[in-house]
Image 1 (cartoon, rainbow over the protein chains, first blue to last red):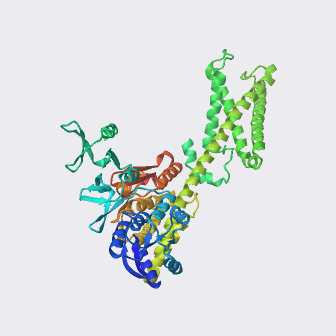
Image 2: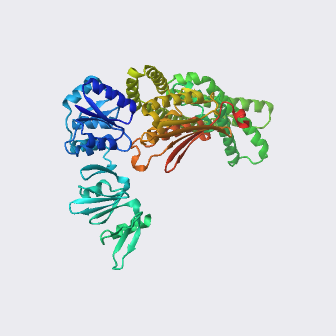
Image 3: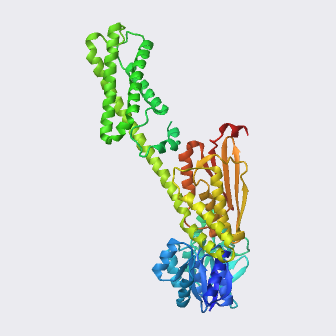
Amino acid sequence: MKALIVDDEPLARERLSALLRDAGADVIGEASDGRAAVETVAKLHPDVVLLDIRMPVMDGLEAARHIANLESPPAIIFCTAYDEHALAAFEASAIDYLVKPVRLERLRTALERAHRFGAAAVQKVEQASGEHRARSHLCARVRGNLVLVPVGDIHYLLAEDKYVVVHTSKGEVLIEEALKTLESEFSERFVRIHRNCLVARDRLAGLLRGPDGSIHVKIEGTDASLEVSRRNLPALRKLVRTL
Amino acid sequence: MIANVTSNPKRDGVVLQPSWLPDFCSAQVLFAVMIVAELLVFIILIAPSDETRPLIPRLTTASLFVQWLALVSAVCLCKLRPRLERLAPWAGVVVAYALMLLVTVLGSELVFAIDAQLDLGLTLPAQFQSRFVWRNAALCALIGAALLRYFYVFAQWRARVRAEAKARFEALQARIRPHFLFNSMNTIASLIPQRPQEAERAIEDLADLFRAALGNDEAQSTLGEELDLVRRYLDIEKLRLGDRLRVAWNVDALPASMHVPALLLQPLVENSVYHGIQPLPEGGTVSIDGRLENGRVEIAIRNPRPPENARMVGRHGMALVNTRARIEYHFGRRGELEIDAGPDYFACTVKVPDESRPDESVTR
């Protein structure tokens, strides 16, 4: 059984690695944050991932959601030292988890029954723990490779057919998500300017009137100018004035 | 006066249950009694009365008389306080009230008799003896009731302030426990096979931290002890976080023997690590700078502040609010907790008066 260890504490990884060897598993890699975990899973295809919850960059719950959306996702076992809310949430959704310090016997049983949790189950945990925060990254695929885009890097999102094009400072990627769900998940970060477009509030550089009388949005740090629909204009005007 | 009374928890701590009756032998309460007595004198003189005699002699004799009665009552209440406190509260109030009236009646009789004997004409003509005594008793009854009520309300208020400070202390103790305890246990479990000596050290540090965290609210600590506690805490966190946690100490200027409330600094440093270092993948530096400034000890704890989307959720400022309230409780207006939150750094500064050696620290 190929196992991946994800924890931001080196000593915790060390101990888990020793325990996994004792339990007869093969430790094929380690990662120190959620984002690295998702990328490593996509690269190494482990059978099981031991995932800490509190980590920098991307926490364990979000990483689990991204992992569960991959093709043939590995089993996930959550590990946590103490997280009242998360623990209660796991109980409620019957997702298996380990508490640190982990016991060898307990690790063995967890490996034996290592369920596969879908993204929906993890989402349920997030909601039950009262932490249904917006994701910190969007997950895209570029030529079969997994790409994680930090939400903070996104300039604007443009819907095209059944895809959404994510425009960032480093270029653009396609994601298979609906603009509407993105809008409600990241309502604090993005503002709708058109039926097909969401713009990051902190990238709004101003409004421009085109020669034909239509209004466009200038995006900070790019040459892009995006058309504003008449319906979204009043709210946007108000927002630009407060900037 | 209020600030002085509340910022002296040590003496208050001797009384197990907050009493409704104040310590009449304390200078502050005596002073309050004398002020009230003098106000009463002014009221008596302002009220329309016999205007044939000049004001100043009347003021002097009335002040002497009223202050004398007030102080005799206060001394009696002071001496009888232990006994009064053993009674049921309502019985205690009745007895204290009766005692004040008795002192006034007896005092008035005595003064009237002396005045009549010496024929000084300070009180009233001889046929008005009972009127003089009963008027004084009635005044005493009204003012005494108001005064006792004031002391009662004051005692209640003070008890509530203390209870609040205690609750805040307990909240601070509680927050150190679960999350940190289990992480530390995990660290120690990881160290045992390869580095048993470090594991031993970590257990010793952890024991010291929990000894402090399980101590009680009245426990005073010294600045040196508090700084040691912070060192132990950071040693444990360094094992856990590795190179990500760096610490810059600059506390040589601080007087180690100065008395401070227990757990004054550790919760703030824990906050720094939790909110400032842990969310950053590359970690950062927690700096602790101490200095003496105008007789005040200033300890600044500074940490990097992660970008908004990487910040930890929950527990917003609990340690800050509680520490601020405790500083206020222990030092009154002379202490404060200053918070400076920049876009990429966070600093909080504890400022408390150096009570150990006030003169030395000013001249240093």
